[in-house]
Length: 147
Image (cartoon, rainbow, N blue to C red; front, side, top):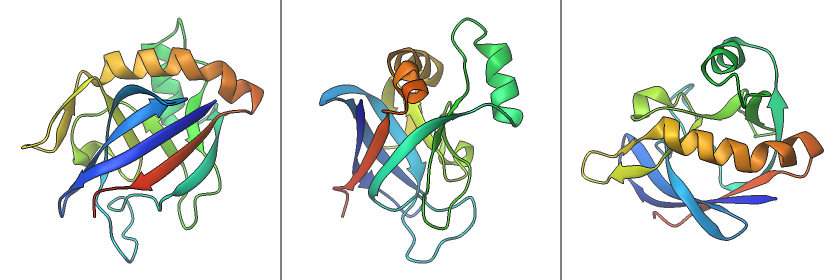
């Protein structure tokens, strides 16, 4: 299964995108801003393709296991991102929630550079892709169309 994030709008603080599953629009995304030189927890990951596995340790995993006991099997965790570590797909609404990770939302506000109904979007996305992550066939590609 292939995920695609098309980054379409950015400001000095945040980046908005659209996430597709096998070519079908699934939800909106929010990330930190582009920086030529990485600043920890304040920089979006480089464009490219990354494998996604499940992370079954750490505070996010424990929190989501309690929040979503009916579906949670581990955090969606991007692999081998140059100069980044522990990049997850998770819930959040503003760039302050990202720390370099990818946030998902069912709607967005371009003027405020925020996303909304993140829990709804996360639950829908997760249930569609988790088995592919377990099987080792889930990847995500980031494309910059915001420049």
